[in-house]
Image 1: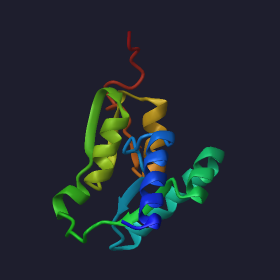
Image 2: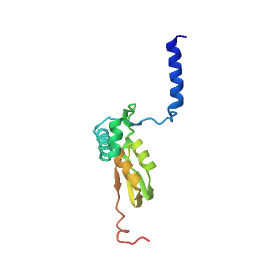
Image 3: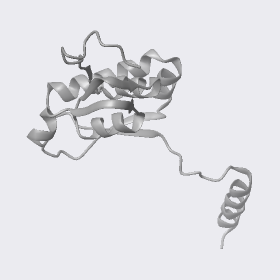
Image 4: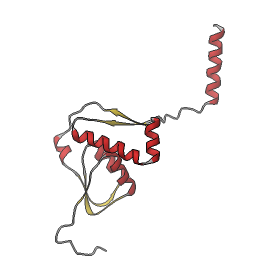
Length: 144
């Protein structure tokens, strides 16, 4: 072993001791598919929404948030057109992420509540939140 190899080995050992361990947390890589104008609009919406937040803009500029093209998979026709219905309860960030994965909008009933985090995530991922109105028989009726 040469002096250079021994020096390299010693430097590696020192760096392993001094530098923090790799936690596996790399950049936030968001897989996107751009097959049509709707997909492109959703991507642009994500970028614009991230850029509105100073921290999001800093993450974009520093490369901590990146976009990667996902494998091109045909979009199922039924899933693309049918919304996920939420009649009551909470619309959570997890449900918004599912809707984004499945390229489906969320149709929110009058008794459903959208959490602030879910609303922000929907804006960032380009998921449509469509609020439905109560049926005519329930309009004007007080809920307790």
